[in-house]
Image (cartoon, rainbow, N blue to C red; front, side):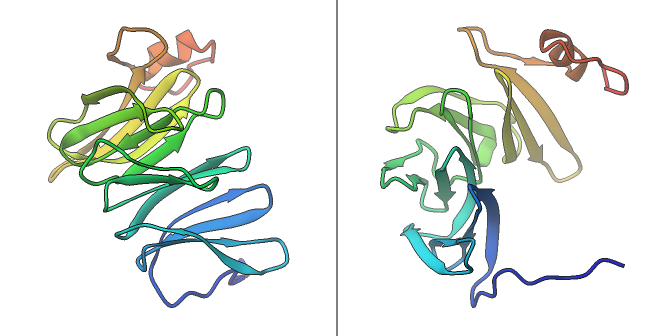
Length: 181
């Protein structure tokens, strides 16, 4: 049986968590992104205008999105995401591009100043609840009434389309032993 260790007690719902450089960052229903450092001290990083729904981090940079449709960074930058609501967010560790997912299958890729580099509807019938970078692929997951799906989008060149997981593994030179075609 595993032992439970409470790292943070909060008076509001915790909606998302990430760990970066020894600190725990968590976004809450009180519209706030908090940081708990290695000493256990809790500080407020920033506030959104609505509930914080998602966050991600890489190399000390934390990005968060919320029901207000905005993206905020831990270094003080704030910009509109081009989506009405941000449900998922991921920052590419290689080039710091920020991917956001929202309702109606919307996906946008932004730079750290908020400039939109690309935008499309990938999951036309569902909200993009999960998003993450895998090399130059953006992997997205959605939920519909009766099923969900995971798609991978090639983002390195002008061409965009989704590929099978086997093709992704081939392009990234990863052995594809138990991967769906």
